[in-house]
Image 1 (cartoon, rainbow, N blue to C red):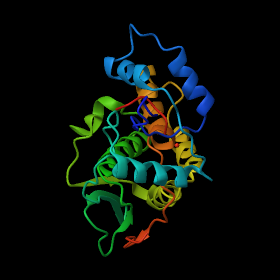
Image 2 (spheres, rainbow, N blue to C red):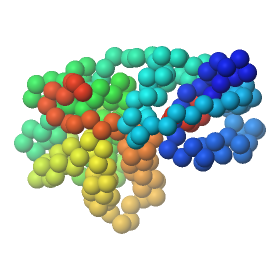
Image 3 (cartoon, helix red, strand yellow):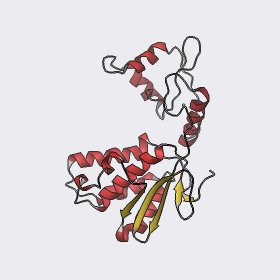
Length: 231
């Protein structure tokens, strides 16, 4: 998005550009944040760049954000320290951690930046609820609902450990359907509406609002235009 002087104000990515631009056209100014209104009033031209697929679009968006640092972008304009989601299975216990680099004896996915902490917290909640469907969110370990986890988060999986690791590996290579389907299959039919909404929100985060890079999950994995309202 550029202004009258051709200065780039905002960089983003959209899967459905028509729908996203339409949301700006019908936006209610009484409800829209002032920052968004200032952007829309300043924009005179929108420049489009088509990418071959979702991963390449994400990579291009990230590149432009760091290079241009547009005025109305906040997230992604600075390169933070690399963060990896790491996990390993010790017998019937799954351990999740966030590390600065892939570690020996751990499987790793990334780098993800600060998103690694969000991903770990989301996975921990979903796995715990799937493994303890009758206990509900009220019995979650303290702090887990709000993403406050130990440096290494241990989840007792019992005999389901191999199944969980297999679906987790597929999830982290972009194959989300099997993981989400397995989570939903573990939940009771009479799940409380609040808890169902929370699970749905976490699953949506994994598959939509927090798109997973299609990097191969393996031991020591180190090698490796979203047009939305401004952050």
